[in-house]
Image (cartoon, rainbow, N blue to C red; front, top):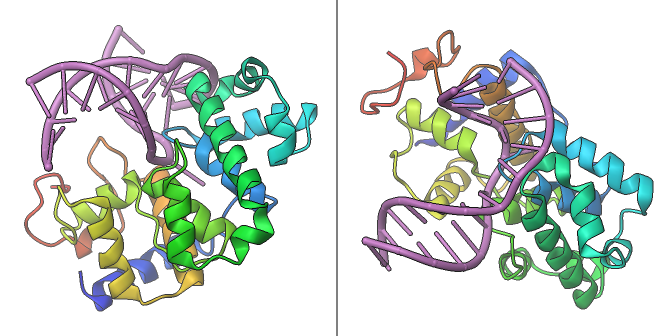
Length: 220
DNA sequence: TACCAGGAGAAAA
DNA sequence: TTTTCTCATGGT
């Protein structure tokens, strides 16, 4: 994918949907919590769980750690995988507390912070990059299922390429630009929710004219 | 009824 | 090392 292609898709998406002003979280810590809870889950269900949780306790690492695990899981029922996510959220909170809180994390270099995040149980590459970009404003491109689907169909990334390779591809094409990474990923998700669905195949997708050769999964 | 939703980790091959 | 399975509720 060339810089021109990356810029062209971005311009199309921005023109179609306008600025998205992501992430839909009020505070730095809420963004971190939301990143874990939204794993393989629609955001509307994350909002339900967050509303239930914050009605009971303040949204802080300490307050969440003080909740019994079963009670925390009960609040997380709307997001699905609630037993798994209760453990993952607790692991995140433990790590934040052990690190000395958010100010200590803010002072870390991006590579070190990413390494720290990936060492937390339940934080994989996408969740780590969500947190880096949207909670810490670091220039890291987030690759998710929508990104793979759209750019695979456009023929701009190989269908079986790994997470890191795709991330580097975007970062090389766009240059380190936190604001653009933020908006670009939000627009990809918006497009994915609206049009670029798993099936039927992208009918009516406004980006079809950009489709290149070589992807069996792209629209016909 | 079947599929999908802003994944990740464990287990199996 | 790579692939498959499991976790699970809620909406369409």
